[in-house]
Amino acid sequence: MKKKGSLFIGSYSGIKVYIHWTFLILIGWILMSHFQAGKDLGGALSGVAFILLLFLCVVLHEFGHALTAKRFGIKTHDISLYPIGGIASLEKLPEKPGQELLVALAGPMVNMVIAIFLWIYLTSIGGFPGTEEVNSAEYWQNMPMVNKLFIANITLAVFNLIPAFPMDGGRVLRALLAFKMDRTKATRIAAGIGQGLAVLFVFLGFFYNFMLVFIGLFIYLGAGGEALQETVKNAMSHFIVRDAMMTRFTPVAATDSLDSVSKLVLESQDKVFLVADQTQIHGVLTSNELIKGLSQFGTNASVAQVMRQDYLTLTSSMPLQEAYEKLSLSPCQVAPVVDGQQLLGILDKENIHELLMIRQKLA
Ligand SMILES: [Zn+2]
Image 1: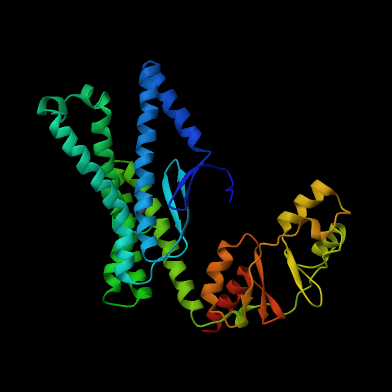
Image 2: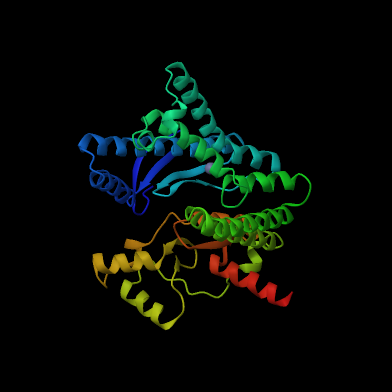
């Protein structure tokens, strides 16, 4: 599976690791800033080496989450590295508080373990600075790489344990609360505490360290998103696929030309089409494939040439939440809903959002 804008760099235990192209900007920036500070090529390269090692620690942190989740039967799609950090995309979050607690803690624990090993190493070689060195600016500017990595890993562990979403600490807090109350309430309280902390960070940031302002804003936005996600999930738990599916839709035939489908797009509101005839479903045509097909093969090409066949099939009695999760992972935005052999309708995420919005208005 390819990932947009990202480079595949390897995989372990079935989990692929990707690096986003913007990473190159980070590397370029580091080289530049080293040269600007009057360092030679060796100094600049060691700056890059430090960043690469730092991100290796970030990858190990994410594997901490991913491999712990795997023990509870939860798959991880991939681990992606961005200049601001790494993200392990878990198929879903563990619902049991005990499991969520362990999965959330595993990442920061990896950094603590690395820090302990570095501490043992530094102690054994007498690598820790004396009081005099700690107070000299020159030492901080030319700190040995191992010392830098030691500090970085402790920082990663502590930073991620800030009890606010989207940090690991937010999940730890929710898991602890969820031992005592239901998950939605626990999420609300954890998100509230997180947002309170975020406001405090922004406030303190203006007086002490402007970096805190950014951290605060980052947390503030993340906390809101997590709470919303949980609310939506909770709302969905009352419905099955049949409640949200669309029964009126226009299927296209595999033999239709792309030209005729483009006309359909303009005439109707549909952007994604089910390719089917009376007896069989053949595939799904998304606007992406349609546009790509038009530019590659021209207007006379047939739907069959460009449709996707890796579509998802849903049953009408499937819990809506499960369908939503599956749809989020599917490359096609829409899925046919069937009962045995019979095609009943189609479902996309927009249908689900509409259903939830209408229900909320009614309530
Ligand atoms: Zn983490």
